[in-house]
Length: 468
Image (cartoon, rainbow, N blue to C red; front, side, top):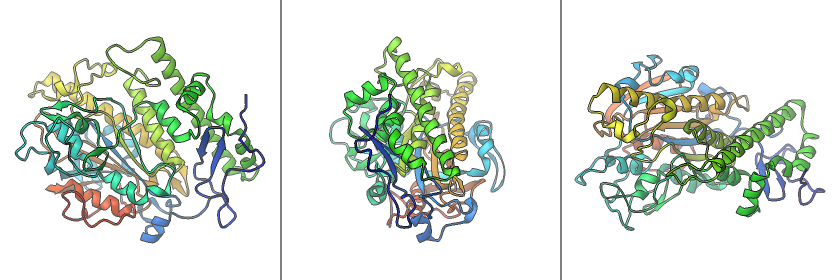
């Protein structure tokens, strides 16, 4: 059954000043708003890139769309010797852990030397895992409490969202792959709010993440429908594309051949993601997961869950539904096992390996697993055309942890990978070694500047990070 727009006589896509499509163009139907990917009919160059004089650079003239930024958090640090590449600058060899990134090597920078000083105890005793997630994007010392008097600071993503979030339908997007209690003691006297969240609106207000791909999908494309109606549509396998079919047909008649192909490919990718979500819903309903309160729509395999959430972020960026996202692959101190890669023990438990070679080998396997999923996401981003380049060219994506080596709980020399050309403002394909104790927040200063934010300082920054 095809569902038509509420007012078939009036198109819901917007015409820009030049007569072409607006970058805010969307298809609408009953309970659905579907933003469009970048099309040639939209034309134009990112206003942020123009203002900063950044069209060009390593990404060429790909900056025909806004800069998007994502921050990806992985728990428990890494086995650092196995993670660290050999060499520096462009003359480097990817480490065994980072080797899955070989196909996108020219689009990444591996960064060493950055430190989260406020993730250290600084007199507060144990609790490094809670502090690692709390401080990851804030650069602030978390008040040690398991009560309601949590206190931290605004995170870099929310700092940006408050200044530029009005430009998109969603000011920011917060997603994850692991739930945790919202309150109570989760790590040596630290509130679960610290381990569960990396996005903080202000000093005592975390921004909760969504772990159910179906919920995120509906947040991106749902409009007036109630939660019950959204669930019913997913269960009946009704596609959001059915609800915007009238607008889509009308739009196609205005587009050139290349744009019609792009729109068809985009709709195909949306329908494929819906299919994967519906499959996960059926799988979850058929056999409930033991000892795990899983929302409807979560795949049983962690790799599939991670990939779906990455695809939610890709859709959000591709449609310019938001330009800012955070992704907690796991919560701070996650003790999740990864049976699909042959690891039955908990991740946190294994991170305290005390140089036991069997445990170290399993940690390396986990580290590589997370990098593999990240690399596959970057490959999909690189394969998504946008402007004269790719979606990846117009993104700046940070992947890392608030702990360096999980065995010793240190917070210097953090394992950080930056990906994307940042709308032409970042030179990529390098290993960058910064002096030990360089504040992580110096990197955030550089990110905020590229996002067009007005920022004098952030967290414990001492200035912007040079050489990017």
